[in-house]
Amino acid sequence: MITVTGLGPGDFDRIPAVIRSVLLDPGLTVVVRTMRHPAAEQLAGMREVVACDDLYEAEAGFDDVYRAIADRVLEAAGRGPVVYAVPGSPLVGEFAVRKLLTSGAEVEVIPAESFVDAVLVEMGYDPFDRGLQILNGHHLPVPLVLDKPTIVGHLDRPEILAEVAAQIARVLPEDAVITVLAGLGASDAVRAEVSPDDVDPGLAGFRTSIFVDSEPGGLIGAVRTMAILRQECPWDREQTHQTLVKYLVEETYELIDAVARLDTHGPDWVGYAAVEDELGDVLLSVLFHAAIAQENGAFDIDDAAEVMRQKLVRRHPHVFGEVDVESAAEVKRNWDQIKDEERGETRSSHMDGVPSGMPAIQRASKVQNRAAKVGFDWSQASEVVPKIREELEELEAVLGDEARAGSELGDVLFSVINLARHLGLDGELALRQAIDRFEARFRHMESLGPVDGLSLDELDQRWEQAKHDH
Image (cartoon, rainbow, N blue to C red; front, side):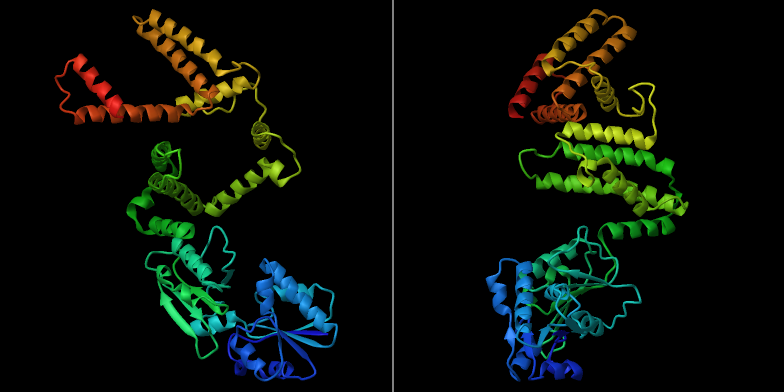
């Protein structure tokens, strides 16, 4: 027979009398998970106990430790009745208890006060008010959502406490205050209300936790801020799906520009800061459209996210199903096929479904890819170059005819985009980079002195100098 109970959050005299009597019964063997707890130390002064602290040093990982603890308790139970006593409650965060309950042995659980109870008493908070979230500091969820009062426990090491505080700081407003609680239920208890950036890692321990009750930041905070703006800001109230489209287009191009400027030779932290900023602006447009749709009773941001999640699962049967794939190209073919099935499309042409409102470079690449699927394509990039020369010759022959020149110029550009596609390059990004290089070199020309009034030869000399310097 194994009796599992808890030592509560602090001193031995805080433990209810019924549990104290079990722990002091001389006919029972008492196994404690750790001596690093005031009630365990005080109990060891009253009677003999078997501790499991040595297993934390002997085993490689926590799961191995919990299995070894369970084995020790089961081995002791083979010799007679055993009490396994854990810090706090046996039903909150006690993984070895779970292994005992599924071991097949006869196990009785006597509930005890948990660290959660101690935190709620200390903070004077009733979970029925606004809910409660309890997280394991060793395994914080991603994304970390702190939209309700939250207790983070298992902050046993300084590096864990520091990392948890840093993660909390990322998703709370800058002026947020959290409460670090250490050693509740004993005379050495500490309560520190600080900014997440000012948490002292030295407070880490087996009986340390954090209580967070703040207006949320991060994604949830942004959603709530958007809702407030729709109610209280005259400009935001006036916006519609239609009036917001231009901003989405503008912000998307600014994001593209920031991505194009990223240094591809390694982590570009300055560049990433710009991408982060522009990505936030695109997200603002998404939240804005979702807020308007929610007001109209259509959907909210969670609905849109769930539709996207379901779509990802459906279109990745090789990840979430039993489909086998051998290449990224096969993944893309499956994606397109599933996409067509979702839309119930029966195409009369392979060109159906390419939006006419796409930017021209992107649309050109899209229709070329559609043609390539039926084999109407060059086999390699080197075969496209002669076609570009041919189109240039045709353009040169009609330079005096504006209408025909426009048509032939389009053919030249279309062929160049085809070359980019065969090279595996994004034509839009390549052109943007070329524009950026030209602009930088021209600005350098200007930095060498006034350019107005210079002859073409003098401008060419400036240009060659700019190319040399940049």
